[in-house]
Length: 352
Image (cartoon, rainbow, N blue to C red):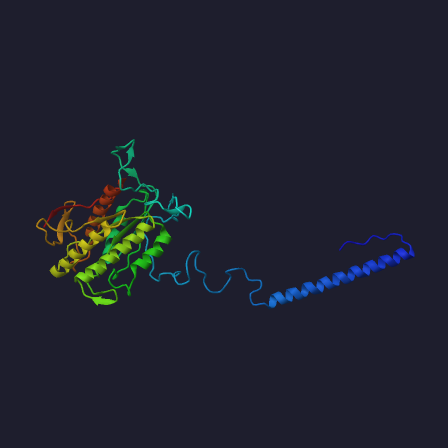
């Protein structure tokens, strides 16, 4: 508080000064009472003093509804390659007819992947592009896990490729009440912003599904129609998000009837994938069939006798994973015109 300076005044002047001082004091007291009343009223109001969104319950991210803002309880597994936060993919502006500019993700982002070879003045170049900070989201069932583990071992940390492995065993597209891959993929696309989505599943899908509310059995024509629609929906989800899609098919199986079912599923995968823009199907059937087209587990890899499959005649052995990973990486390099080489290539050199 400032000290009041004394000054000489007349009696009348002293009286007027006293009145002014008293009036000022009364006004200050009244203002203080009003301020106190307002503060008390504000503290008593149930919404007073609360910043927007400051609640005990979780607040969904911007642009989502409470129903869609859910977190998967399945633990995520990632590759041993150091993970870095991936930026959102670049967008391409498309002029709108009535609503102004519309933005959409640029397919594949800017990591070097492209379905066309690199060109200069219309001439294709022989050298492949260098991979630059590409995020590959790999999803599937236990067979997808086998493939992902093999790729993780075969990809160099300096390759520029970041592998995010999100397989879940015992899942597929048939039993959506057990696990809904389309809903999960939608969440993972927002989380990782992948340049490429790599899919390998189907080992658990030779079972009945619901089509238009009706239960239908594998492999009836209605079942095939309904399952094909699910394949297209899953691939389309990734493509709309701005990612390339590569679907790796099922291999030949040991049990004949199960193998026939896997072969049918592969036909549906190929049909569904090739119907969607920026999606590619990679067949592995011939890779794991012997020269006469039959299932065979024993082979020589890089000249060394080994076993390609596990005892169940379905899953891959450690060597089989490496053979599959080598094959897939070389296919991806050829499809997307990038320099992507396995660190320790594993190739079947002979059968028997």
